[in-house]
Every structure is written in structure tokens, then in C-alpha cells.
Amino acid sequence: MNKAIVKFGNWIFAYRNYLFPLLYFFLFIPSERLLENPKVAMITGLLFIGTGIVIRSVTIGLEYIKRGGLKHKIYAEKLITGGIYGICRNPMYLGNLFILAGFGIYANSALFTLLVFPVYIFIYLSIIQAEEKFLTEKFGDEFIRYKNRVHPLIPDFSRVRYLFKDREFNWRKVLFKEYNSFLLYIFGLLALALYQGRLTWIPFVILLIISLLAYYLVKTIKYKNKNAWSE
Image (cartoon, rainbow, N blue to C red; front, side, top):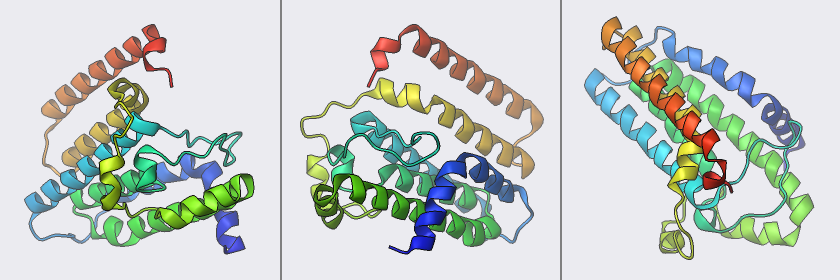
């Protein structure tokens, strides 16, 4: 492994929650169109975002792995190789990349999609390199065998039939772990639509209020029923 990339991966892992939101602002910088037809861009972007959300949801609902690390450092108590991790080693990152690409296409921004999105790809690949170094040192041959069997990002669709084997999809876990993300996705889509003139202020405010009410409803249910979504 490239030591410089691993070092950068560890650094970006610690500060990714501060850097990633900053890159989102490029969506609002005037740019050349990515696609000539704005409606095609909007629909295509929504399909990409939806695909990313589905990937993240399936991952969380079947076999969630905490990615927060420990004290801003990469950490893992056990090696997870089942569920969706049996067909892709980093499904959450794959889902994130679909969502990021989707926002760039939805915004019809050549700047974000062709320049900023590749930066995200490099960042995630660097984090993966850093994580693989940690996992190799901690789990040794067990992780190496898993690494040689499963691609870091490209799913092995020949193994999809094993995805739900001996597993029950936990939709509560998806809802209660992703409700913050869902609100951010909705707000981002509404803000872009407002900024680009596809939405006026009145429907923007109405949709935002509905989203916030749904958010606080889920949040309230979550904290009143903690045992229902425990891992």
C-alpha cells in the first residue's frame, strides 16, 4: 500500500465530517450544464440518489457496521463478511458515491460532477486503503482471504442470492439510523430546486416543514422505543 495514501486516508477519516459538507457548496457555484436537457438531468440524478439510498438501506438493514471509528481513528471490533458485505466490501461508501454523483447530475453541474466528484472518489479510495491496512494488521489472513474474494466497491452480483440468507431485514434500524441523512437529502434537493428556479418559496417552505415534522416524529419514536432498534 502507498504509505502517503494510507496516511492521507487516516487524516481524512478523522476530519471527513467537516470537509465533506464544504464540498457540497460546489453544487451552488454557477457551472456549465452537464446535460443539455434539465429534466433528463433531474430524473437521472434522482435515480442515482435513490440507488445510493437503497444500497445504504440494505446495508444497514441487514448487517450494519459502525463507521464512526474510535476517537476519530479507524477501528473495528470484529470482521463482518456476511450480508451485503459478502458481495461488496464497502457498500456504504458505494451508496455514498451514488448519492454524490446523483446530486451533481440533479444539479446539472459539470463542475461538481466532473471535478468535485472525482475528489470524493479519491477520498473514499484513500480511506479504504487506510482501513484495509488496519484490518490486515488486526485480522491478518482472515481479512486477506476476504479481501481477495470480495471487491472493495464493485458488487459481485453472482452472490446476490446469498444476500438475505439467514438474515431478516430490519427496517426500524434503517429508519432510526438514517433519519438524519434522509432530512439532509431532502433539504439538499429542495435547496437546489429553489436555487435553480424549479421551486418557489411557498412550496419550498411547505415541503420543508413537512420534512421537519416527519423528522421530529421519527426522532421522538426512536428515543421512546430504544429497545426496538437495538443492534
